[in-house]
Length: 209
Image 1 (cartoon, rainbow, N blue to C red):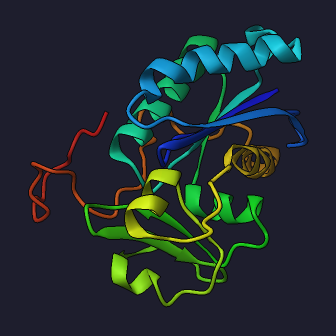
Image 2: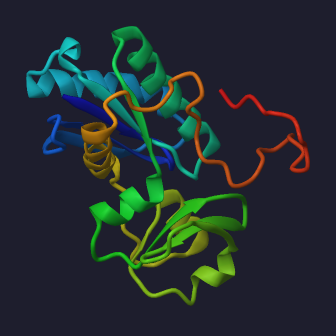
């Protein structure tokens, strides 16, 4: 069984999937500032409600962003802790493509990058980019965006991100050919810009977790 966690926005999602990626159960909620307090209890409740013991986990999958610094760190820390503690492989999956996989009707996925900026991945484009909120107004709808971002940027009709199931499916595909997964010691979120207080021009390695 694969445990998948996506915390790239304030709308958090978790999923349980069979080793082939088929969905067992999932949960999603708007976490605002309580990701660290809610994530593990909700994951344990999902396992319990599905009748699946934690010992039955075969791999961990985690959304790597880009997106919320806090949400990504919380999701990554829990996923890495479980992978290390259970001695199971871990796979990092970019979050925005997973959001689009999970919502075939959406034209693009949007995550918060700052007070006026967003990470944008348009369907059919390989890499996300940082855009000003004004650019989002001209994009085709619907967009995928967390509830708080949709409200702040006035993204009418936005769909909430529910990426964990797609993260699990993509992880299963990778594990089929790469059973070792990623190196838990070096796996980190995708950051397209430095966090507050870190000089963007720094040439030294930054410890994110």
